[in-house]
Amino acid sequence: MVAITVSGWAGSGKSTLAKRLATTLKMEYFSVGTWFRKKATDAGMNIADFMKVAPKELHNEVDDYVKQIAREKNVVIDARLAGWMAPDADFKIFLTAPVEERARRASEREDTPLEEETQNVIRRDDQDIKNYLEIYGINLKDMGIYDLVLNTARLDADEVAEIVELVVRKAVKL
Image 1 (tube, helix red, strand yellow):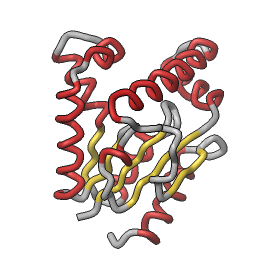
Image 2 (image 1 turned 120 degrees about the horizontal axis):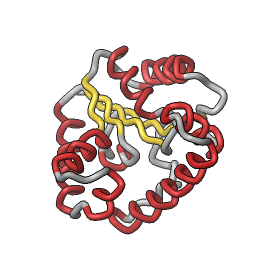
Image 3 (image 1 turned 45 degrees about the vertical axis):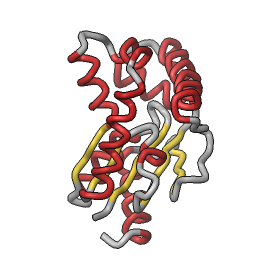
């Protein structure tokens, strides 16, 4: 079984890349964000409010599930903490880009003002750094666990996928 994790800051392109890798490499795709959004919807809450009150047991449940699928399936796991959640994954990727670029992408995707998205990205980064340190003891700025860290600012989604697929195929026996 082969497990690949795709982590990254909001707006860095992690979900786009993870889906493309799963398709191209003929692997399953699992998104922790989608899993949490479904739990929030089931609870009648928006994701931001839900994440503020989500019990530690829920975090533990998804952590355990990610570890399980990383062992048992050919899977690409998409999550901000994917590299930490599946420490034995065969290949761990982290995507980044400057705040301005991530905000521009979010603004285009959500059709919202750039200034608003810039503040949203900064706020989300700060909140995630704080939350993950408190909940898991993880420093999101520690890139030492990743096999590949890629700044996606000057690349389109196809170029990112092409580069990452090439590196993964060289590094991992598929």
